[in-house]
Length: 162
Image 1 (cartoon, rainbow, N blue to C red):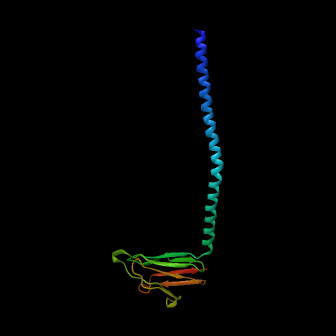
Image 2: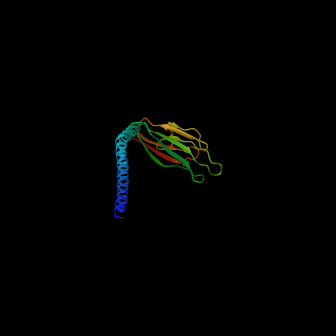
Image 3: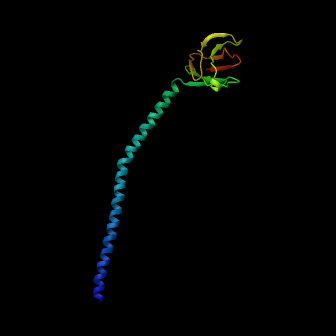
């Protein structure tokens, strides 16, 4: 009986070690495969990310040397106004006026540069802007530029270019 138990026990022990060894071998294989894949894939990912970072930096550098477009909204049906009232630009930047006075069908507006006394000075003269229309003006010299809506002269704004 003891011999059968030893024989049976040996078989069970050998199965136990074989199963444990196989589980360990599988785990080691998985770990090694993961390491190898990590060594192969990580540099590729890092290279790709580095390429994207280089593109982003180049884009930022390009943007910092290129001109920008800033927006002034024409709003307020009952009390129309330019928003913002004052805007700062760099030389070479542009300003885009957008007529958003859309309440009750909206009103047409224009944008005309004026001198300190409120008289048109011809530096820029925008077209009549119906609701949703835009007008863009580029500034190539520094200065302070006052403007109004000639139909509603109480609408005033200031552009500072430096």
